[in-house]
Length: 89
Ligand SMILES: [Zn+2]
Image 1 (tube, rainbow, N blue to C red):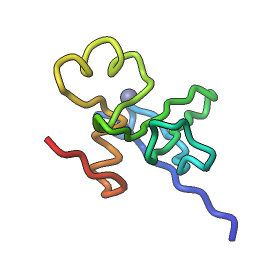
Image 2 (cartoon, rainbow, N blue to C red; image 1 turned 45 degrees about the horizontal axis):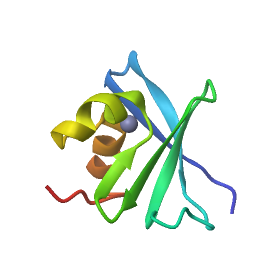
Image 3 (cartoon, rainbow, N blue to C red; image 1 turned 30 degrees about the vertical axis):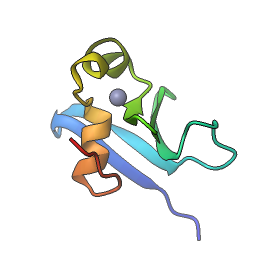
Image 4 (cartoon, helix red, strand yellow; image 1 turned 180 degrees about the vertical axis):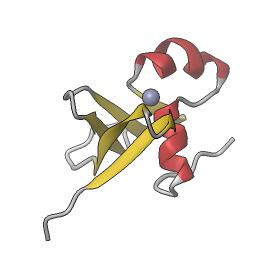
């Protein structure tokens, strides 16, 4: 079956972007349990993945700001909001 999942992430329908959501396929990095790639139409891609420490994202917002505060970025929050991942707090 050929079908793809798109997730719109934004404040409103005119202020945001569509992301293609794909589950990470093996082989995964040794520390990664599972995760997803989110790809914008521009080709920009972020990886949301779970390791032994919890969920992380490769985006700048998470890497440089939210990770240190124990906060999640919009990519993690959106995947959780639609039930694709569960983030323990
Ligand atoms: Zn992110």
